[in-house]
Image 1 (cartoon, one colour):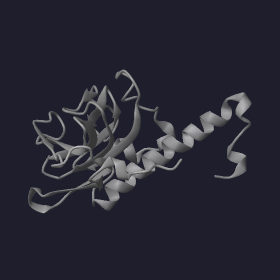
Image 2 (cartoon, helix red, strand yellow):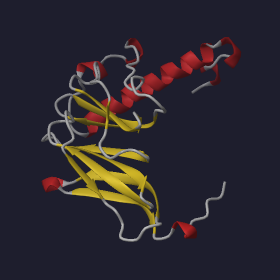
Image 3 (cartoon, helix red, strand yellow):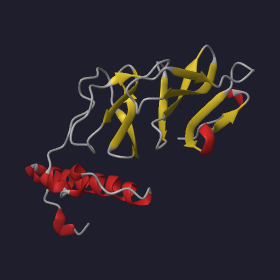
Image 4 (cartoon, one colour):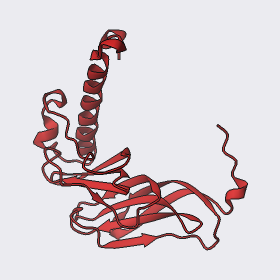
Length: 196
């Protein structure tokens, strides 16, 4: 962005202009994701991102809302997952992002962070998050078989030894229903020294 895109922070307009750039970027990213997947951009994304109001998906949830991740699937599904709703929040759109469902809290997501999301054209949506529970740090994968309407399957990848350290999970959906999950794993949290 050029320096002329900003105004002094004291007058409040700088934030609005920066917010407009973020909305535009979000719209461009979602439209680009559709293009990469070989999909036509839904009408909500094809329109100018600056012409549409921001859709507030997460404020109905109590507590913090952070680290939003997004995935799209044909024909016009948009999936959002984030840290929030007392665990990991999730909402979906069936019309290209013009409207979203009420947010839900994903199962077994208390004391978790780092959401990741992947979908398949056949309607399966996978959301993973790293959970810290019972002296373990491990990924949980919640699976929906109906385009994110419900999450009927939950898999916890709990390591055999307690006291481990884990961080940032990543998720990818492969052919034939194969799901790939990676995360940072150290057998003992005593061996981890975080330098600020």
